Amino acid sequence: MIVEEVRKFVEEECKRPGNNYGYEAYKHHFVSTVKYAKMLAEKLNADMEVVEIAAWLHDIGSIVDGRENHHITGQEIAERKLRELGYDEEKIEKVKKCILNHRGSVKAKRESIEEQIIADADGMDSFDKLDGLFYAAFVSEGLDTEQARKSVRQKIINSYAKLSDYAKEIVKDKYEAAMLLLKDAG
Image (cartoon, rainbow, N blue to C red):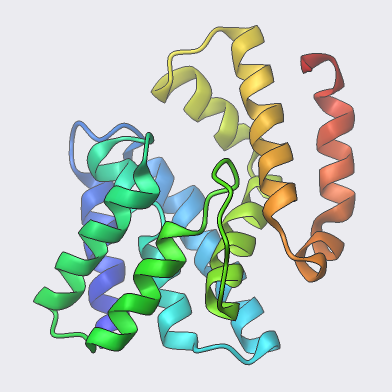
């Protein structure tokens, strides 16, 4: 099954020594993003296979090449891996667009429900993982306490801004709580 092959690939990349985010990213971001993506895909009647594959691969660029432009490097890595696995070319293009357009800090025009679902699932996970955002800020990005607070606050704002109205409603209470906790970081 291709989804399982993709999941294994992401897990192995996260285990690889020297990546910026370590295995923590797999356990505490990829797995929960996939959970949200599948929930949304089912509710919104999207292509479940495309959504699940894109959710597994959405941040692979960060793991392999670093955070900057990870939406671009991620789609390139995904294309190579999916071709290697013999995946359908039309579906590869859909997965690539999901990855390219998932970031909150980059203004993206999402043209399909699958693209919006990946952006939503990635963003929704942020509200469950403030500790993970701080971990990345301190350990992976080398920020001091004040820089980390500002960075995490901005990531939360970006994540919320990219959400669909449907997803915003689901995480509204968590967003408001995070903003209250981080209010002095502006």
